[in-house]
Each structure stands twice: as structure tokens, then as C-alpha cells.
Amino acid sequence: MPAVSFEFFPPKTDEQRAQLDRTVAALKAYQPDYVSVTFGAGGSTLSYTAETARHLHEQHGLPAAPHLSCVGGNRAELAALLDDYRAAGYRRIVALRGDLPSGMATPGDFRYAAELVRFIREHSGDHFHIEVAAYPETHPQADNALRDLQHFKAKVDAGADGAITQYFFNADAYFRFVDDVQRLGVNVPIVPGIMPITNYSQLQRFSDMCGAEIPRWITQRMRAHGDDADAVRKLGTEVVTTLCRRLLDGGAPGLHFYTLNRAKATEAVLKQLA
Ligand code: FAD
Image (cartoon, rainbow, N blue to C red; front, top):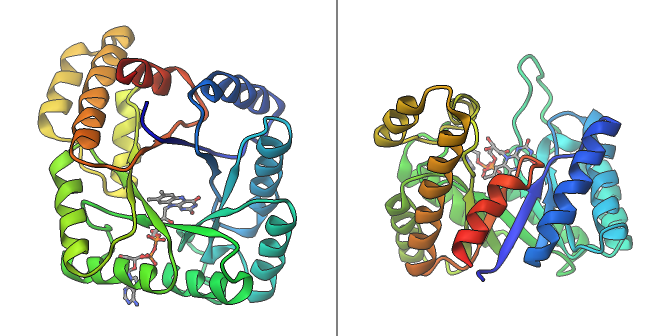
């Protein structure tokens, strides 16, 4: 079984909390290296991330990795959070720029993730293993692909230990990205982020937002199944399992699953991989 990690978002209602508990109970069997918890833009969700990380750590006994973003506060607020996370026993942080909600103008004290990584290193030394984001298909706001690679390198130079990619369905984009950054002298592990496919219109919506490309052949085959949810799920499992196999065979150091707090689709892929 490959090294895996799972990403969850902080639940906000009792129903969502129960759903997350069921998901974690099922996915625990795959012995993740860690579970990460996203951090929504804007200070209001700050406590939800910390709360969920604590729950996963204390109630489920899993190594938690909270996400932290530049949008999450000023230096003092982020320093306090880092101290809390250290006291809670966490050893890993996923450091991001985050996206500002439209209409919000104050991005906090840091503009780019590299500045946040540098700050974490300055404040917490080597305590945390720092993961950053990587974009095999280029970040949608980048001036161009080469600049984006250089900006990625800047995060590693600032102290990141590893990276997790945005999801993608084109394995060659990942291999090309790894080759390109290695040529720039980056040697940290770059773990592919995997988005299981369960619902095609939801996937399309996410992909439009984050700039991930859905290859035409997947779109056309999904469309052929129309409203047949079972057929869509089956095709999704097959497509994503094949992608994971190619990535692992080509040397990917592990897989990070965007679970969306559901176990079924991730489990279906992991069962095929076993
Ligand atoms: P950066 O690395 O700062 O890059 C952002 C953009 O700025 C890129 O286009 C880059 O090329 C450019 N850039 C960087 N440095 C410079 C510079 N010095 N000068 C000019 N341009 C520069 N978002 C959340 O809000 N919460 C989450 O929990 C979250 N989790 C994520 C987890 C993963 C694994 C991934 C891949 C993404 C996640 N995101 C999350 C989304 C992320 O915040 C967005 O994609 C965001 O737009 C970029 O974040 P970054 O950390 O890659 O930013």
C-alpha cells in the first residue's frame, strides 16, 4: 500500500461532524501518514480548523496537519496559532497563501506563501514539517509557467520540506513538473493531490475555480453516462485508480487524497490499489 494522507475540511454542523467521524473511522484502516485540515479564507473559520485538528488528533489518534494561510491573520495571530499547534503536539503544517474572498482587501502581513514559510521557520524553528502547494498545470494567477516554477522554488528555499499538488488528471503534467523543479535544484518530495471523482458537475465546478484541467476524453465519457450515478462513480474509480498507478509506478512518493469528508470514493480507489 502506498504512503497516503487524507485532507478534510472543518465541519460546521452536527450532521457534518457525524459524517466526518464516519469517514475518518473508515479511512483510518489505510493508516495515513497524517490527516490535514483545510483553512477557509477569512478569520472566522480559524477556530474551526484548530477544533477539527484537535478532534482528529485526540479522538481519532491521527497525526493532524492544520493548513495555515497568509489570509489567516497578522504576524501576532499566526504566531499564537503556531504556538497552540506546537503545544497540541502537531508536527506538520500545510502553509498556503489562501484565496481572498471577493471584496476583501486586507491580505494580512504576508502576500505570498513563501513569506509565510519563512515566518514559520523564524518563529518555530525546525519543529514543524512544512508542506506547500504545487501546481503541475501552473497556478491560474501565475504570469507564466517558468515564473510559477521559480515561485515554487522560493517556497522550498524559504524552508518547506515537501509539497502537495493541486489535483490533475494528466500524469505527464506531474512528471514534467517534478523534472522541471529538480532541474532548478528542488529535491523535496512532491506528493500528488488526488481528487476522486464521484459527481461530474461538482468536479467541473471545482476545476473551474482552481484551474485544474479535465481532459476532454474524461468529460466526453462522463457525459455519456448522463445521470447514471453508479456508472459515473465506476468510471471515476477506474480513471483515478489508473492515474494513481501511473504516478506510483513513475516514482511519486505517496498520494494525498482530497476526500471532501467522504470515504467511499477514496476507499474505492485504495481498494483497487491494494
Ligand atoms: P503562492 O505560492 O504564494 O502562489 C500564489 C501565486 O502567486 C502563484 O501564481 C505564484 O506564481 C505567484 N507568486 C508567488 N510568489 C510571487 C512573487 N514573489 N511575485 C509575484 N508572484 C508570485 N486555500 C485555502 O484558502 N485554504 C486551504 O486550506 C487550502 N489548502 C490547499 C491545499 C493544497 C494541497 C493546495 C494545492 C491548495 C490549497 N489551497 C487552499 C488553495 C491555495 O490557497 C490557492 O491555490 C492560492 O491561490 C495559492 O496558494 P499558494 O500557497 O500556492 O500561493
